[in-house]
Amino acid sequence: MKRILVVDDSQFNLMVVQKALENEYEVHTCLSGKEGIQFVRHNPIDLILMDIEMPEFSGIETVKMLKKDARLSRIPIIFLTGLCDHEVEKTCLGLGARDFITKPFNELVMLQRIKMVLELQEHLEEQALESNRDPVTGLWNRRRIERQIEQECQKRPAGALAVMNLDHFRLINDALGYQQGNHCLQVVGEAFKDLIREPELAAREAADIFMIYLPEVTSEAEAEQRIQTICLELEGRLEANKFHGLTLSAGIAMLPQGENSFGEGYYQAEKALHQMKLQSKKA
Image (tube, rainbow, N blue to C red; front, side):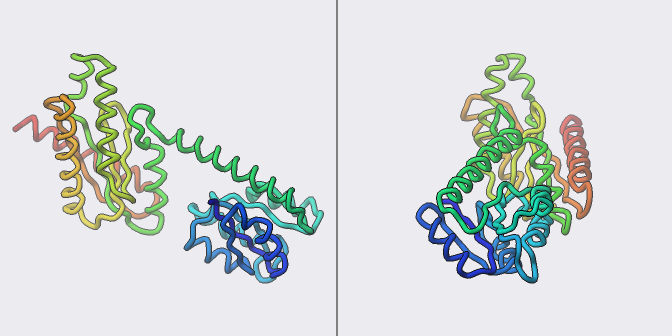
């Protein structure tokens, strides 16, 4: 059941909206913008119905604060209004409002507008998901993992990044053809999905290059231990699927705080990977 938060300083309006929606949605209510912000920070919400005219924080001011948080800024918002002010509507639309519901409320119109906004949001999320997925493995792509790391590292150092190479993968393509090569990549993708634990992320960057983001590790030694466990398990999966002789090499870097944390972390991890492969050749 979809979760809707209604923010309005009128207890009567909250009661009317809750009664109209409670048979189809899980409805939560807040009497102020400040209370609403605190609620969505600690509770998952699919849609916010926001009154425009409220004391202390207006609906517009409240939404501006929500938009500063990357996680909360994606929640769709419908404004509740008893006004007919085109300038206010223009401001609301500029903040990303999906629709308006006018007071006094018409229950059927309100239900239809909410349904349409939620359906549009689902469609947009599906599109975003597909644009962030590697089509062969089903793993995230570089764009997705880069964005996640940049968001996490804005305020604090956020774990480690591993850049991994599927050694000798080109031999599979050369000897068995691209169909078997893609099957091999799919085995790798499924293995990563099984082995990765939230909030970790796995991504495919190129033909035989993968990345793993470990947001909760606090040292390079801890990251190395985790990556080694993943590599050993994944190599076993490849062997079980008759992809003999394939191994994984990995370079690891702790991620710095601040801008371009992904770029710096990727550079250091790729450099470590290159050094590891050189040492392997010498050995």
